[in-house]
Image 1 (cartoon, rainbow, N blue to C red):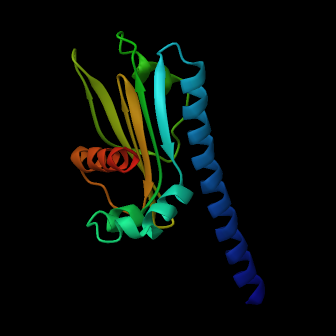
Image 2 (cartoon, rainbow, N blue to C red; image 1 turned 60 degrees about the vertical axis):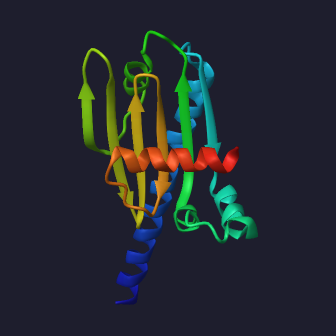
Length: 161
């Protein structure tokens, strides 16, 4: 029985390590793509350490937004200035989004986007890839609409500026 429990715990530990390496792999791909891209992209990245600092800052304690901040672990936002709107196709073709499930997608003459979700160990990863960029959020929140995803990105922008 002890052997079974030890094997089970080892399995959980390996799954968690694999999940974290997948997260880092995607983040590294995003940043690498931005630096090498001909799409003329800008990005901002907010790490778990910054969210912890914000959550502990007395200036934000009275804010109703603090509950959201405490549940966000990582955000990266990419915006490209390429008028050809090729980011979506180029980014998707260069990376396998294994583990992510499509929540919503659209393709028309005016826009293309896909909204993905990946869940692991109580944490959710959301990835919105559009014609001119993307938004990635790792959080314990359950985001159910694009408006909520946009709200988190706007909140991060407000905190930074």
